[in-house]
Image (cartoon, rainbow, N blue to C red):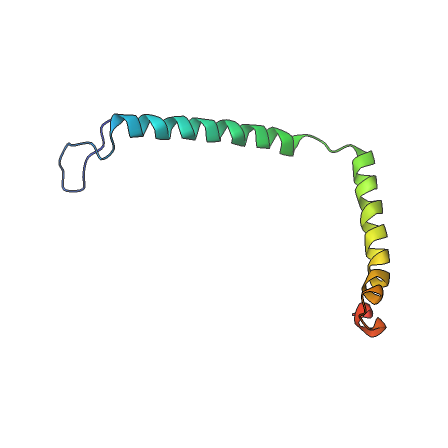
Length: 79
């Protein structure tokens, strides 16, 4: 297909090399999106989920102690 200018001229807006480069980049991006969709659709093992929740609970439980150790008043860690 040939692109045309808004005024109706049949001169291409982009050179053939530029069109080819854009098409190759779009193909590569489409391949990356396909890989991301496969990763997103794959199930997460329960051990990963449990480990993440345990680490998060440990971090949130120890965060007030770290904040007090940095010099914040204890009342600020409650908020």
